[in-house]
Image 1: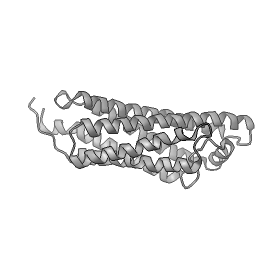
Image 2 (image 1 turned 90 degrees about the horizontal axis):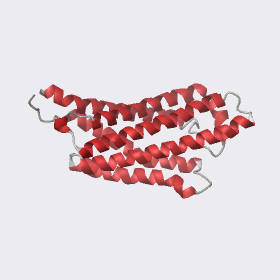
Image 3 (image 1 turned 45 degrees about the vertical axis):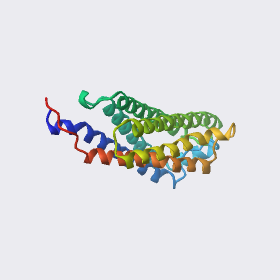
Image 4 (image 1 turned 90 degrees about the vertical axis):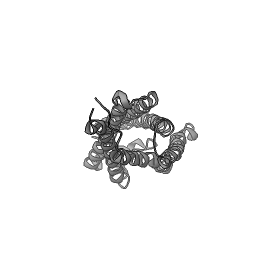
Length: 227
């Protein structure tokens, strides 16, 4: 294997991780100011918001799909690196990351189904169904967040990385875990819109850490291996 071949998996993973970060941040920047975060506390208001801003909703959803899909692909590449660079911990980290991406895509599938329910936001039946769909989507993304945190911890502690990046990963994982636990503290009430925004903020360090990991992978040159 020549040097270019040895660098390709790392560069591909880095590109996918950076693409995921950019797509997700762009989606958040679009939907949050427009009130399209789809809080299950008021399904009727969510349907009205989606009906009124359906184009923005679909664009934001499309960006989120790209982000989760890139994360899924990055996890698969990490788990399937060439034998010379593969380790059981690295495979586990990649598998957890891929599972997080898959759970995120399932979350987006629920949000896509909500689009058709918003055709008539005044329909009480649609509001009832929408409440169940949104609630399921929210807990699916909570699962995605938990898997993402697990992947972060596994990568930071078990994969050879610079010390600063490793420590930053642990800190990001703690913040991400706090974001995952927030909905569990609300009991039967569920998280409010403001608590949901706090959760997004607490999960941001995980997203940024994977962006930093992607940048490091793009700039790192693994030792060439002989074929």
